[in-house]
Each structure stands twice: as C-alpha cells, then as structure tokens.
Length: 381
Image (cartoon, rainbow, N blue to C red; front, side):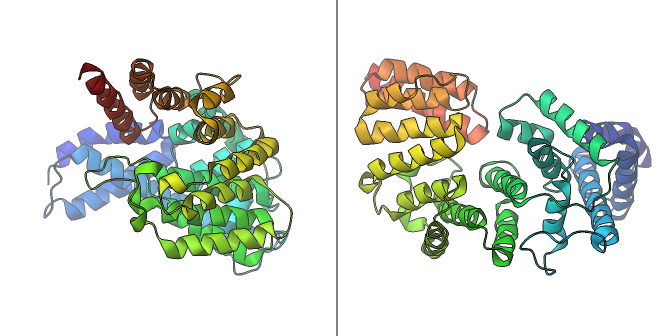
C-alpha cells in the first residue's frame, strides 16, 4: 500500500468530483470514504489506474450518500407531504424523490434538470445534450434550481407531467448513452402506471417497452450501431412488444392523446413490420403530424422529414426540412441520408463526414464515418 501515492492523488480526485458538480465538502467526504476502501482493497487487488479507481469509487460513495440523505429527508417530510394525485403509499423512495424534486417553486425545465442531476445520476453534459443547450447554460440552470430548493421545504410534490419528462430523459440516456439507466426508468414508470390511470403515464410506459424491445438488435457483435432498417428483427423481444402494444391501445382508448402516446404509436408501427420494407410509412407520417401538433418540437419535425422521405420520396423529405435549424443535432445526417436516397452520392458522402464530426456519441460517429467511407468507395469504384 503506497500511502504517499494516495495523499498525492487526493487533490486531483477531489477536483474531478467538483468538476462533476459535487460541492467541495461533499467531495472531501466521498474521497475519504474512497481512501478507506482503497486501504482495504488495494493490498490484494492493486488497480492499474489508481486515480481512475479512486474517482470511480469516490463518485459512487457520493451518489450513495446523496441518495441516503434524500431518503432521510423524504422520511422526515412524508408525514406533512400532500399525497400525489393518483399515487398510493406503496410508491418507493426513488419515485417519491422524483415527485419531490419536481417542486412547484421550480419551472418544469429546472425541475427536470435538477432531478436528472440529483436523483437520476446523469452528468451536466448528458443533461445539456438532452436539452440541446450548452453545458455551461445547463450548469447555471441546475445551480439556480439548487439555490431555489435550498430555501424551501420538500413537502409539495410536483406534477405528473414533470416527472414523466424526467423518466423519459433518463430512459433515453440509458437507452443510447454511457450510463445504463433504461431498466430503472422502466421499473419506475411501471410502478407509476400501476398507481394511476393517467393516459400519458401509460403512453410513456408503452414507448419505453417498444423501444427497449429492439435493444438487442441495435448493436452488432463488434459494438457497431445497427440502423433500424438493417436490424435483425428476430432479436426483438416480442413479449415486450406485445405488452407495449396492449398498454398503448388501452391508453389510446381513453381518447386523450398526448405526445408519449403519439411516439409510442410510431414505435408500434415500426414493431409491427416483419421486414423494413413492410413499414407503414404513410401512417407513421400521420402520427408525426399529430406529434408536431402536440409539441411543435424541432426533433419531431426532423424525424417527420425522414418518414416523409420514405413515404413520398427523398425530395419530399428534403422539402419537409425547410425552416429547421441546420445546427439541430442529427440534421446533417438526415440530409445526407435523403441525398443518398435521391442518388446524389457525392453530396451524401460529404454530409455524412460532416455529420460524423458533430455526432453526439462515439458509436454514432463511427457509424456515420463508415457511411461516408462506403459511398466514397462506390464513387471511386
């Protein structure tokens, strides 16, 4: 055990936690806990990367302490807390924390950001990417939210809509990001759906199940990203698909359409196609029209353009992109795909390469780079 090495690493490990948003005092406590773990473990199992080991363990110690503190505060306020509409007493601490962090004193956007950071365990960078804003902007938003809630009592739960937004973003990060949170998001949404008849809770659960059903086919054995059209549909989980469709149909029968139901309907149409060429793109465009009407989301408009390109041809898809900001994430990749479909391989190859440089994840960057290389090889041949 090299105690001098441990002492030398302490400032760097504390600094790493502070950069992740941990206040200095909490970082010191977490690092001390990690040092105690190192003293116990290292003599028999010395790490190859001592600093990385300490940062990882200290971060876990911090998360454990933060969740324990949140649970303690939850127990203290539960007697005074108003019951959340539609929720039963069997709700576990984690889901209850989601409601309490969605405090009425916060705007919905700030409540979501705070909950993702404090309870969901996402980094500021991951949250900023989900919201399509700079990391510094999101850091300021989270700091303001922390200051606001530090002066209030957590005895007024937030609304279902804000909690659903958090669960949706946690699932998306778990589904496609660096931290696997998808199963936990599904578990909490199942629990929420069992306690309420809110149609958008059911819509979100259906959406999660239908997306999660395709997860085994999303990457190849070598870790490469596999586009939806190329996935081996035999790997899809038919049990989850059937459950998702059943949940969705029950929600749609209530005739109170929301954005999660619309997204789930699109996912269900993809799941219903035995082969990619059997996909009902006309119906998918109609559901995207509903989604755009409900949300006016630029991401929904971007995805709608892809569907239009499949239903009515690539030039119609390119026309559907009119008015969208070219800086929108994945915009360039969509334009590249539609140009390839239209036969303009030179433009498509150039745009795939451009899209790769701004891709939000390494698997996506590698996929787009391969697409550009594939077209360049065809052009040379």
